[in-house]
Image (cartoon, rainbow, N blue to C red; front, side):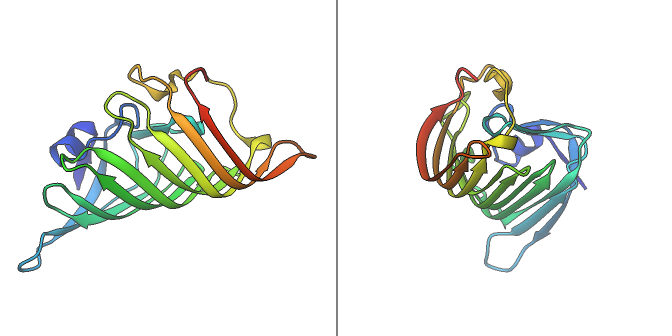
Length: 193
């Protein structure tokens, strides 16, 4: 087993946005070294001891929560990520992670993102640079505001980040029991909550 925390990820060449990962946990790491190729790796964890947060979605997993996390790719400069799965705390995400040439977070492309019973979409989470909350783009799916989390001040991004932006291009947006919008498009900010 290996230790997983921000410092360990930094040493591995992966830099996540402030506030996205906290605490300390463990993961099983397998490395395969085929001749003439970059080493392949797979990492899996129950997430015990780690906290995860995506404030723009009102989602957070506390250090006492658990779930399933798997990621795989190839070691090199930068690390190449070829698949990611996160299933915890009412959130399910499947997709691919893009890193910058320096190993920093560039974007997370999710073929499927389900949050609680209120969101089921394809999504892209894009870096806005160091110390800034990422931009979130939601598309080709549905959001139901009737059961979406409410409240907060936008300060949940952690580390003094300014609020991030949210772009929606949805098939269906349910607002109330009697109001639903189809082919909904909009741009929003979480700067003021």
